[in-house]
Image (cartoon, rainbow over all chains, first blue to last red; front, side, top):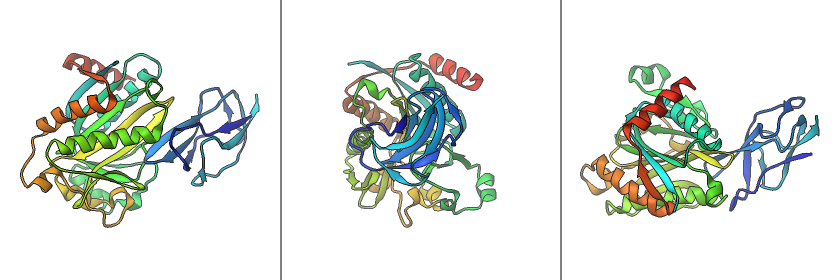
Length: 76
Length: 231
C-alpha cells in the first residue's frame, strides 16, 4: 500500500522536511511517518494502515504534491 | 457558531508555553477539549522551525545565554524567528475538520487576523506572494508558522506590536537576508498598549474564524499548566 500526501486544500507543491520512519520500521495505523511543509505550515503524514515501511519514494528535502505516493508500506 | 475558548496567558517563557500547547494539542486531537486560542507574549526566545537551521542564528550561543535568550528547535513550519515582549502571539489549537480542511486557507486566515489587528491601529499591512506573513513598506510586521496533525493546528502567528527590534539582530529573520522587522508602534510613531492589541485580537479572531470566543478563567489555565507539566 502507498502512503500518499493527503489533499491539503489549495496547496500545490510541498516539501518533505523530515522522515520520521525508516525502511524496515513497523508502523501502526495513524503513526506519524513524515512531515511535509508548504506556506510555513508543517503537516504530519500518518500511516494509512499497519505494516512495515518497505521503502521511501521521495527523499527528505525533496518536493512532492498532495495525492502523490511518498512511500510504500508492506502489510504486516 | 461553535464556542472557542480564549486563554490569555500574559507574558510567559517559551518552554512552559510549548508544553501547554503540546498538552492542549493532544487533548484536542483526542476530543478532550474544544478549540482553544492561546494569547500571550514570550520572554525573549529564538525559535528554529522545520525549514530552518542554526546557521540563521548570527549571535554566539554564550552571548544569548548571558542575555537570557532561549533557543528552541520546534515542529512549526518556517525558518528562524525571534519572539519577545511587545509581540502579540496567538496559538490557535483548532480542529480544521470543523471548518475547511485547507492548510493554505488557514494560513491566509492567520494573516487576515493580523491585518485586521494592524488596521485597528490605522496601519495598513499587506501580503506578499510566496512570503507568508504580513508586511508593511517598512518591513515585516507579522509572521506565521504552524504545525498540523490529525487536522488539529498548533503554533500560529506573531504580530510585532511594540517589539524591541534588537532581538532580530541576532538572527536572519525567516532565513531572508536583509529582511527587517517593524512594529506597529514604529509605524505610527508612538507606543501601543498590548491590552489594546489583545482587545483588537479578540474581535479579529472571532470575525475571521466566525466563532464566538469564550474567555477562560485563570483557574482553568492553571489546571492546564499543571497537567502539561505532568504530561
